[in-house]
Image (cartoon, rainbow, N blue to C red):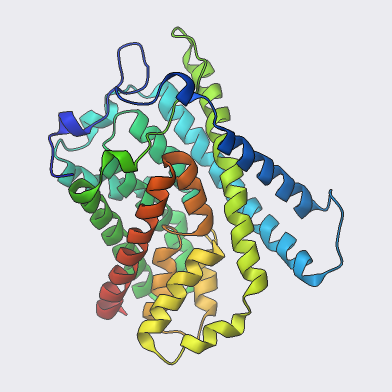
Length: 346
């Protein structure tokens, strides 16, 4: 969609605090059978991972359980952090605050929102519920999506971990910051230009709250709603990543070492499939010594923006139409940004 005025692009709430005009209401706001199915699958996977449903001595299954639990244990604390922030925004932040803070022109609001991602010390699991809450509170989707992509890649914890993983290589930290910001801003601008409203299902507010509910009641209901909704999708994404770890041997990566552009593509795809938390992925990238610095930069840029668990979370929050389009374009822009920035700084 082309450049629009702030008033037309920014979502608003009705005076009684209901969802924005045109958002689903009535039966559509109830939890769908698909969400219940995802939650059931998530619980079953966790029980299998802990051995509650019986243990197998097969090494492959043992590895699968270990990787599954590692990803979930990494992700849940930051998912909880994200849902706490999301619920706090919904309960305590005035609906028009972000509209006053961000520039009125979307083209300017996008880089400001992307830079604001530096203040959230979490991984990609935290960014999805926060971005959804920002949309519910009136932030234009393009700006909220730029924040979603930037927050897990440029926050101080991630940048410090990158500096520790690459000692004596400050250019790697700068390259990660630059390429991640570039990708986030470009994706926000692309959404302004090409995005369509029907591709994005606006995140729903918790159901069943009385109009006179207090802020703490809204906070509790929002926290429960967002955490339970996203938790199942996190586990499903972790299951997919664990399956890849079991089925694909590390030797496959060696097929791409001799071709520079294939190195970049291979590590970009690896970042999607491994689904490593953004606060730990620098140490994985540093261990891939057979690959070029630019290829390892692609791993660091793509991972926090596009991975299996993040795609699952986005599908649950914003709908399957969104998840079928946005991650694929993000992957392409992240790889191109990595090549461009890596060619200059590395």
